[in-house]
Figure 1 (cartoon, helix red, strand yellow):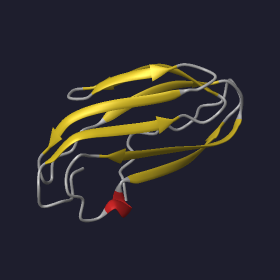
Figure 2 (spheres, one colour; figure 1 turned 180 degrees about the horizontal axis):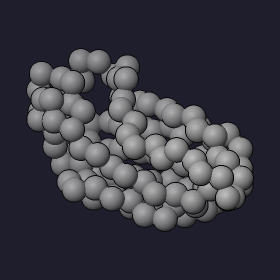
Figure 3 (tube, one colour; figure 1 turned 30 degrees about the horizontal axis):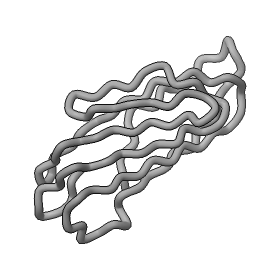
Figure 4 (cartoon, helix red, strand yellow; figure 1 turned 30 degrees about the vertical axis):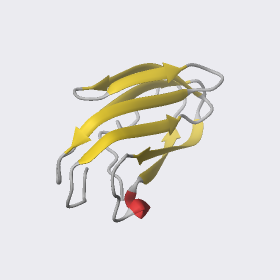
Amino acid sequence: MNHGPNRAVNIILSDFMPKGVFINSVISSLANCSTIPLPVNHVTCDIPWLNPGEVETVQIVVTALQPGQITNFAFSTNHGKDFNPANNSTSKTVQILPFGFTAPILQKVTPK
């Protein structure tokens, strides 16, 4: 979400996926995304612009390779004036259950 008073342009979303996951797909309505598969496991999305208050959702679908706890970190940069760079990153920790257990689905992670 663009929390700023100005239009954000040329936004780069970067996500180095945690070890232990395989990237299946990346889905976005506005962003142009690319992936570098294992062992790097990196997703980069170019978002042309976001108006103040506008949100762009990037869904990254992964397969966990083993049970355990993983933490994912993502951050963004843009080519405009950023009044609060402290809200340009987010992280989420989830517990991967052994095969056969029903796990919750992470619907949305919103930057701070």
